[in-house]
Image (cartoon, rainbow, N blue to C red; front, top):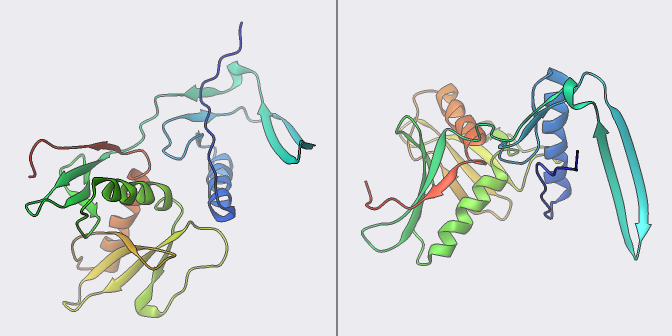
Length: 218
């Protein structure tokens, strides 16, 4: 049979982002779960119990190539190129002040995250969505009320912060390393556990969520 490319992607990643991606693969392999091929989990592979692994490091025209390749008989594993990527959708819309905003709505109808601010340019709101998609899955979670700090290693370019607001309710926000808040839960929770569940829903659903523009702002 001729060779078939099921999935191929190429992008620049920071060392932290790459470490996070490899940890996701290692965790899935260790648990015997399907391995996410892409960040959104739209393509997964369930490899055989044992694989042939080839590691190659070479130089060519001033560029170093470091390749890790796994191989096994197709009959001993499964590939799912239509894996359920998300149970939520990013809604991109203009508000009553003609500013662009976004919100992440779960399939159950609940809004589980939003950008917290309006943008004069649509592309800025779209950049906010991309930042959440890219950073939420691997972001560390810290409790700022306990003066916790994110570990130096791993994670992404953003951190989920849990905190108590002035009404003694628990909230979360996703803060980029540059100090900007790129997303928040938009509501307070009665317990830290509920707030943590809310941010983990964003971690799981943001990467593969489709982006739509509703006809009218609900």
